[in-house]
Length: 212
Image (cartoon, rainbow, N blue to C red; front, side, top):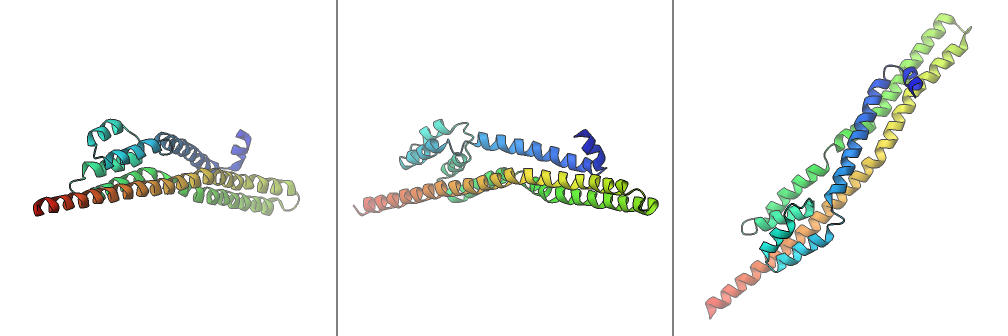
């Protein structure tokens, strides 16, 4: 590996940097999604909706305290602002959660794009050097030319490898973001409908009380 890296030329250094950044961000995003607890937090999310229907706000505060579940945090934001504008509060909280989920995704996307380009650039530079050698030595030493081209292809192979290895977790993380957004929307809508129903029932009770 060290020999291949050395033969690849100077552009192997930015490719190495790209690979290190990609590996670091993939690990960071994997830990983020592992800690998010969306999949295993379904019982808690359903429990919050059930307690909201019962208007048991104290119990909700107890069971959600310190929760890292993004859906629960969005629901709690709506509950805390239930007397003012719960929908806008949940929209704002959801936007913040989605922003956290998309963190570093742009960097991974850039690495997927730029790594093959750096590899191709390294190959082009290597081929130019090989043709310079051909011009200097003629066809008396063809092995030097072919060897130079073979070395030049190392950067292309490295860039493509980095892009291919990065694109799979990148697509996986994007799928998780879309799925999380759908779950947030589902539970926020359920809470919104429930809250509006409570307001409607309350207004009906008040009208009947005044009529009596």
